[in-house]
Image (cartoon, rainbow, N blue to C red; front, side):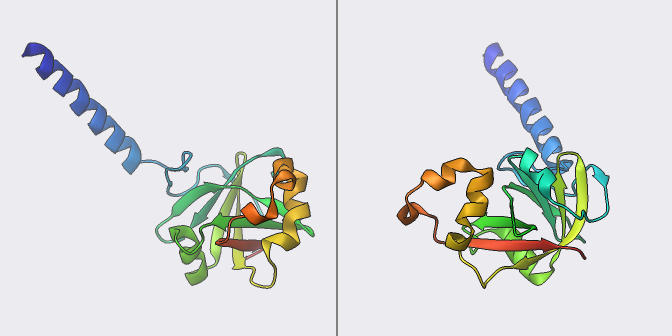
Length: 157
């Protein structure tokens, strides 16, 4: 009986600590969304090639009540492009459609920007650009490509 009380107390502490960490989080952690991104805010870059050194980036939406997520990105024709898999089902793409102001974190640097949904291209049009950063994409069967991908072009505010 004593051991059950001890286990219950430990579990209670774990729940409280986990809850506090969740409430006071900043950056997203893997699949758990974050709030306002931490890091040094820099002006919009002239060149996005630095993103090639990072497999993932963080995107913050909803400037007044920040919501941030971890995602991938790639450069296409000099523009930073951020895809949203299952875009119609996720929160952050809907936030961007309502308010295009975003902040993009690459490494330790945060860049204020705008995100515009790209409706004039398909993922097939961008395969070469995606594969330049993520070579495994080139090896996939095009029939296995995700169907509900929303693409966002990042530009200066």
